[in-house]
Amino acid sequence: MLLTCAMLFAGRMVLAGPAHMAMADDETDTATQTTALSITESTPVVTDTSGYHITISISNPTYAATSPGLVTVAYNPSYTFVSRTDIQHWATGDVSIPVRTVLGTATVPSIAANKKVSVKIDAAADSDALKALQMWGPKPLLVTYQATQATDSQSTGSSDGSSGSDRTVDPNTKPIRLHSFLTRSSQGLRNAQTPPMAITMVMPLMNNGQQADKNAIDQLVVHDNGDESDTKSTQSGGGGTDDSTDDGSGNNTDDTENTAATQSSVLTPHDNDALAAKLSLIGKHSDLQTIADPTALASDTGQRIDAVMQPAGFDITAYAAINNVRSYEQAGVGTGAWNARSALAAAPASSNSLPIAWQGKGDWTRQALSTARKQGYQYVIAGHDFDSSTTATVHTGTYTIPTSAGDITVLSEQKELGDLAKG
Image 1 (cartoon, helix red, strand yellow):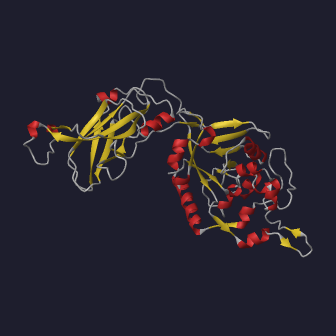
Image 2 (cartoon, one colour):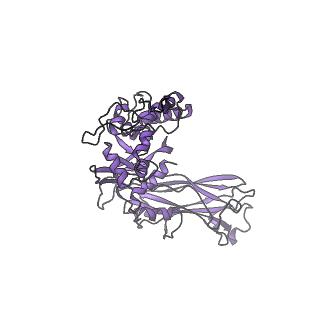
Image 3 (cartoon, helix red, strand yellow):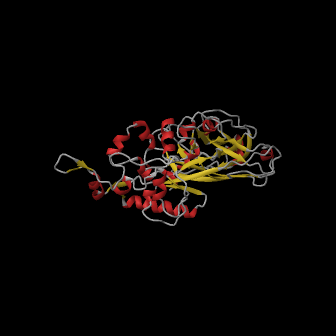
């Protein structure tokens, strides 16, 4: 499911989407909240022919009807965001940017208690407001709602005071503001074109909800033979010392070793259902790439698998940080249990023969990257912390890192889009 996805990019761009809800500047909790704004629909990308269309929902969560009001949608066509931090600060209302080009307004009638209304504002493609937009990219957009009051000429009018033509903004009420973005494509613009950014969404299929298989665990336990000598089951491989050899490319050549996690754990029914849902998702979205833990796929599902990760999602970052090979061997997990060769050997026939190491709970240190390379992985996936010092809106997320075992390529997550994909 998308909630567990990570966004990974070769060339990457932050895609600005609408904010979801806002309330008055001085409102901090539901006790003082009087009216709430949310964008229910808007033009995702504006072109030279699309115009801009936005639907705004205004809700009244109180037990009394509101006064009539006025919604104004405005933006700044000439402002350019210079970093993803800049974008984030606008989205959360932490910065003030002049927003004076009005796309449209709409009057809002009195809203009954615990009710909401929707208004739609349309700006035509040939309107002066949109013609002012001559640069592609996200621009700051502001939705403002403020109560109105009757003018003197209407003071003897209808009791509900709903006529928008004879009402003005009430200066004694605080406006409610919602920060969002209007994104312009390069279509129809004469300024310089930039090359497209390659964006990849990757979903892990991991065996992270396993339960112990008692029979397999019994085979891994050290048994007392009565003569004070201990023997270990070799069915898990990697028990005792690791007698395998390296073929020079970092791949372990001992094919008799299998991961202990493969044989000592089984998926719960709940996780089987979750895995089935993810496999179904793959079939619906051809652009969604997958990296599978081979131990999570008990049989060949026939679904497209783009790459395989280390068996059982073995935590290479923790292994490198602990730096105690013997403790792992004594637990029945030798290096042959989670190298690239083992990952490919356990992978279903329908999967791509590309092993990629997924990040564990720790950071990809130089030692961890070297360990992964020694184990035959030429690519690793990293979280956004790997390039957290980069503040540019557009930058590459691919890094080639030299290690003692050879160069390794790191594919780093884009933070904002990754956060969205994970909920």
